[in-house]
Length: 142
Image (cartoon, rainbow, N blue to C red):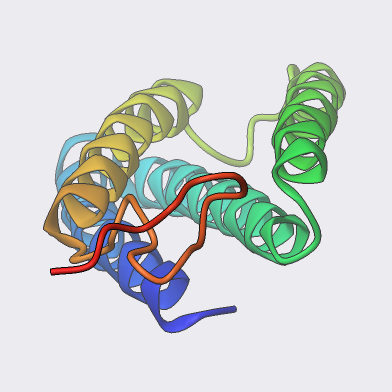
């Protein structure tokens, strides 16, 4: 991963981890240990899923923009399918509080998305490479 990718990852992961910790404490106070476990698993699922997606896209970006888009769409599809399988598999689980789990997933997803967008906005990246020579373009002498 490049330095810019790591900055974006930190901008999203740190606030999400803090929100996940707050959610675990709040769920523990409201729903007890089952709530804390549900909130912890929810925060962990969001962190792992989004980190995997960012790493895959960052790796693919070194190859080409087309592959980067394919990697983003592919990881999104795999994550959605995996989440559906996990939710179906654990739909009858009584080990954790499902409401704490779902509210934490929603809150952490929103937090991650805002953090990632904020990280992108704070990057100091050039949109145009000033050193590129345009074919067929004659430079004027000053």
